Image 1 (tube, rainbow, N blue to C red):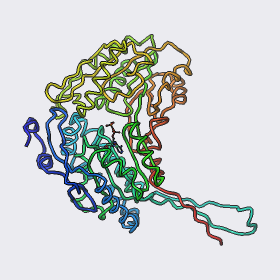
Image 2 (cartoon, protein in one colour):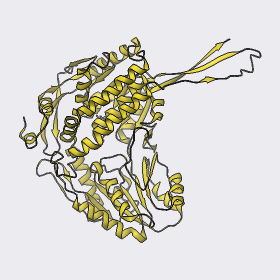
Image 3 (cartoon, helix red, strand yellow):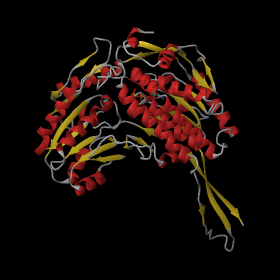
Image 4 (cartoon, protein in one colour):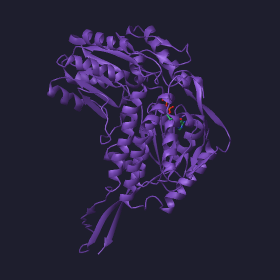
Length: 505
Ligand code: ADP
C-alpha cells in the first residue's frame, strides 16, 4: 500500500480495492483491455499513484457496445416486469447506502473532496436518485388519444402511445462528482429499460468501478445490461459517442467536449443529451438577509472547490452592500482550511489534477494581469505534489476580463457591483454569458425574486439558496450549457422513444 494512503485510516475494502488492477466490465465479466494497456490513478492530495485501471479504446468499446446491443435486442432487461426492475434499482440504492464509508473514501482519495462531504452529499444523493428512479420504473406510460382523421369519414380508431426504451446508451461522465454522475445516468437508463456502456472520467474511475463491483457481486442485472469501459476521452469516449450501434449518448463535461460529442454522434443521428459548463451569477440585493447571502454566495463558489458546473462564479452585489458582501465572503474564504480530503479537518481539498491546477492558477495570474484586485486567497501550491488552490476572491472585475467570461472550474470568485434598480438591466448583465446553467437571487422581496427568476436565461434559478439539488428537480442548461435535462421525470424523455399505435376498429 502506498504510504500516502496509510496516513489515513481507510476501510479494509478500500485498501483491498486500491491494490487491484481494475479491469473493464463487459457482458457481466471483468476483462483486460484488448491492448493490455493500463493507466495510473493518482491521489490529488499527493500526486502519488494509488491504483491502476485498464485503458480501454475503440476495440473495447466495440465489445461493450456489442454486449449492450445483444442484451437490448434480446429484451432481457426491458422485458423484466416494471415492478421487478424497480426492486432491483431500489436494491442498488440500499447497497450504495450500505457501502457509504468505502464509497466516500474512494471518492475522497480519487477526486480530492473532503470525505465527510463525499459521504453526506455525493453518496447520499447517489442512493437517492436510484430510489427516485426505482419508483419511475412502474410509471413510464403512454396515453390514449381520441383522433378524428377527416379524410376517412365514419371510420373509428383506437390510438395510443407507447413509451419504449431508447436502446443502447453511451454515458460519458466527468470527474467532479464521479459517483453521483454515474448514479444520475445509470438509474434512469435502468428505469427506462435501456442497456448501458458507461465511460467514467480517467481522473476518477474508482467509485464507478466499485459500484459496478458491488452490483455485480449481488447478481442484480442480466449480463450485458451494464458495461463499464475506463480509459481516456479520445480513446474510449470518442468511439463511444461515434458508435453506429449506440442509440443515445448522454454526456456531462465541458462545453468544448460536448460540441465534439455532438459532431461524433451525427453519423447515426443518435439522440444526444448534454450537461455542460456554466458561469453562474449570484445576485445580491440590498434587501437580502445579508449574512445568509454572504454564506450562500461563498458556498456557491467554494463548494467542491469550485469544480461545479453550476458554481456561483460571478458575484453581482448591489453597490449599497457590495463592500460588506465582498468582505464577508473574503473572510469566509480566508478561514477555509485547505488540505487533503481524507484529513477530516480539511474543509477544501486539492483540485483533481495537475492539469486543473495549472488551468486555475493560470486564471488567477491572468486575472491579476488584467487588473483584477485579489481580496482573498490568490495562493496556490503544489510543492507537496498535491494540487492545492486557496479560495480566491477578485474584486474590481469587469465583463471583458477572461476570468469573468470563461469557466474557471476552480475556487475563484469574480465580484462586480451593480447600481441599477431596473431588473431588465440587471438580467442583461446576469445573462451576458454564453452559458445558461444556473443563477441565484438573494432578496427578501418576493416580487424582485420572481420577476428576476423569469428574466434569467438559465435552467435553474435558486432564490435565497444555491446548490440545492434533488432527484426530483430537473437540472440542465440553456444556451451552451447543454441539451435536455438530468433528473426529475423530465430526464425519462431522453431515455425513451414515443410510439403512436393506431388500430382501425
Ligand atoms: P474536463 O474538461 O472538465 O476534464 P471533459 O469534458 O474533458 O471534462 O471530460 C468529461 C468526460 O468526457 C471524461 O469522461 C472524458 O474522458 C470524456 N472526453 C474527453 N474528450 C472526449 C472526446 N473527444 N469524446 C468523448 N469523450 C471525451
